[in-house]
Image (cartoon, rainbow, N blue to C red; front, side):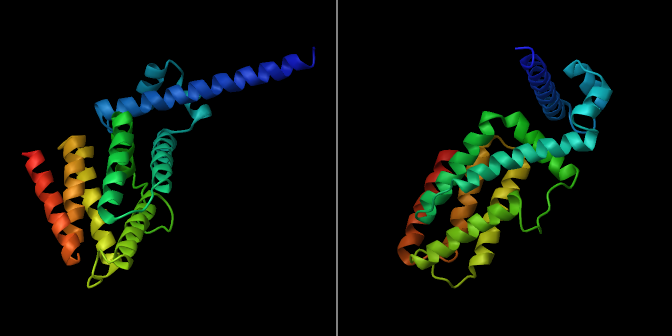
Length: 224
């Protein structure tokens, strides 16, 4: 029995360390979302988390390390959503993706706003890298366009990669407005879907074009 006590003590200390680390990150993302990135300091974070600044350094690191961890957490959650995406017709695919994305953000809107803001401010998003959230989102959009062309929804007169980039841009522009507080999640969703349907319409076959027009008309009527 005596040999088990040190192991239990180590396990308890490890669990406590994990909890304190998570509390620090929770406090950090709340502070950034509430007061802004520029107002975020380690001294204030230590006060909020009820720890010392050296403890923050020991458990996570400096301000940049905390920011990086918040963004990595956001990227992990979002990429998990991308990996679960199933492909159907273009309309149902982008609607399912957008609904799932909005549900993800709504579950912890403060966190996602803070993480995106940090990523932009600290230039933690590398659009050109062959990995990460933006590259994966673009690849998802490209696959939707390729499948749509193969199934006859799109004519193929416009390059699939160009269409994918426009689909991606629609989502990114709406995200920027939401992140900066100009629109809410409902308007975010409306802008993404409307922009994507208009993009598809530029290369849509006759029958699919009519479906898209109906969807766009319905979205416009709903938002008014």
